[in-house]
Image 1 (tube, rainbow, N blue to C red):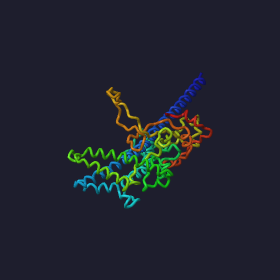
Image 2: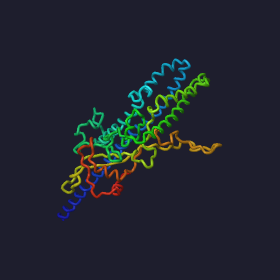
Image 3: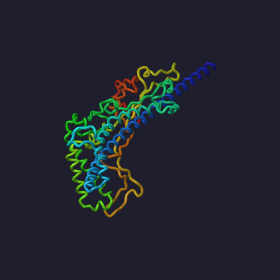
Image 4: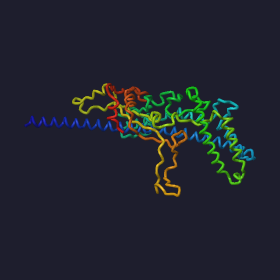
Length: 399
């Protein structure tokens, strides 16, 4: 009886250790996957803000040209306010091409180029910071620390820090490429202006400049009409004011800035067949958790690689949402749907870019998971996935 009792106790002990080991590893997997989801979403959200910043500057360029044209027309009529504001607008727009075709004093264009260069770096830092915070005990920052990446290694326990990396869906880490390359940069926009650097790398720059000029003319004309309608009634009684302002606007667009102060364009206008331009994949890395019951269980994978989880997000322009109430209304001209006043066009003037998590592309994930991660995850060992097919990645996809 004593032998049977001892055997039963040993079996139950082994079962308890096994269950504890499984539960701990399952819990760790869930925590790391949550970290990958949050880190990837945060990095993609920064890129969406970058796209909104580019769109905002596109609108501001058109509005600045329209404002300058209207101020010139008012200045001709002796307006002292217009005379004081014109130098400010000249500073914003920069030196006309009739004076110097290529200069570095066009503020709005410089701002957009800074967005293209800086926001991928910010996205990478945001991804890493969120991953690191999820690696802290209970996700809490130690006192007197503003960022997890500056926390001592000892704060992360025996497994060490949990870095995160944001990747382009093409397999290159975000901000680790030449962001001046218009065909491969992270933010999928191009700069058609003559004083930029994209013209030397784009074979179809002339076609893109034509598109940019047409869109700038449309937006500037609309902005001029809006500014004119906002003038005091006595000013609007001047029948020739709008016509003079329009002539000044045409001079600005066709003579002074025909090839500069152009709006940035999307690298590709369609969303269906260019998903790679608008998708990023995030990975979170950490040493494997130790085995609970090391004499009974051995994780041989941990001897060759580290734990990694992944998620994919895309930044996109959402469709307008229906607004209540009512959802739709019958009118003499037909049914009118009540929706948010969002633009419906997929272009670089829309300022409603947002983010969502999506199922990871199996081929991209398979490539990225086997690639040694760059800084800040340098030294983490990628898994060896010899013989693994994209279909196998699809089976373990978490979204």
